[in-house]
Image (cartoon, rainbow, N blue to C red; front, side, top):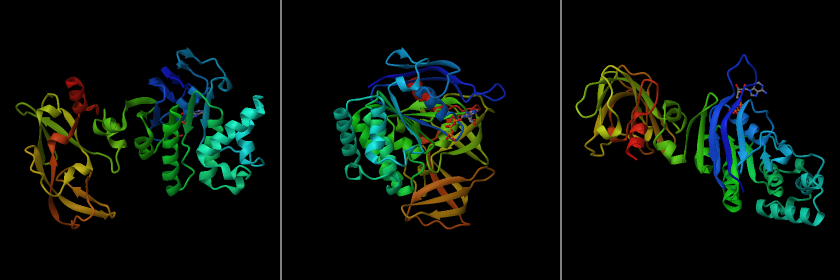
Amino acid sequence: MAVVRLDGLTKRYDRNHPPAAVGIDLEIADGEFMVLLGPSGCGKTTTLRMVAGLEAITEGTVSIDGRVVNDIPAKNRDIAMVFQSYALYPHMSVRDNLAFGLRRRKMPRVEIDRRVSDAAEILGLTVLLDRKPHALSGGQRQRVAVGRAIVRDPKVFLFDEPLSNLDAALRVSTRAEISALHRRLQATMIYVTHDQVEAMTLGTRICIMNGGRIAQVGRPMEVYRTPADTFVAGFLGNPPMNLLPGTATDAPGGCRLRVGGMRFDIPEHRTIPSAPGLAMTLGLRPERVTVRPTGSSTEVAITGEVVQVEALGAETLVSLRLPDVEPLMIARLPGDSEVAIGTRTEFFADMALAHVFDADGRSMTAQREREET
Ligand code: ATP
């Protein structure tokens, strides 16, 4: 078990391109499941590979249990990594794939057998131990890849998009297995993905990256509820938060936002004062937009033209065109909602649950909540 700490971790592959990762400061607690989440190219894999020792560090340090490991080769870091490609030896049985690394380390045979059978038991591979990889399903192969990490009993597990080669149903079940594995082993795990559902369901905390930098770190519901900026707000959530560009206008004791042809009074506790005329963004989660009023005193009516209705069964997504506003606003309604395309319809949103972002995209709402705690 281990604490992993990254201080100012930076990777520059070449001078002509911006760094792949810049000034990453992150502490992963003992037994924590940290997810590195972000779009393609944001530097997640590069960061993970620097932790593993597979990528040279340009600046900064990686420490494990207080010891800087920058100069320690990957094989001596006591870290096991599970890759997207299972990288199993095709000519070896599952048992031999699991045992291979331990044999190379000249571990006593009895100990190897014990570890292989324990890992097989944990992962439900016992009956498959004599099969070759070609006779396994994708999910079973991925379990063998995880098993190879488990038998090493490492201080830290690293996962690089381990589920992305699996079909949708298998992704869901394997995700649950990884979560159960973490609960069982209580080991420190760092997991790279671009899939927000994996991040939300697996992570003790999520580190969201954007352009090689950390955008926000926090518990899943914390980052969902109080995104630090418009990038995080637009990345988490499906559909993501509605981000409607507006301008601040004067309002006594709070903030009034002009968005297209509409005005929204944001309750004082949701925002910090701002000068009239400043560009701001109003953020509304689609599930916070309703067709029936809830009766809250801070609720406002928003009338728009329904341009698209997607009935998905459990929920219905409605796209609305608001007067003089780009982009469309999305409402996520219960599946039995009846809304007709082409109609002008009144929707409701509680401004006490709205988010306000400043001209640089930073959340004034999150800032306010930080000031208050
Ligand atoms: P993905 O989800 O697509 O794997 P990522 O967030 O893991 O993306 P990285 O693979 O870490 O991103 O890449 C970050 C940046 O570094 C990208 O711009 C990528 O093109 C660049 N990069 C990655 N590996 C190398 C390399 N070996 N040489 C040069 N540039 C690289």
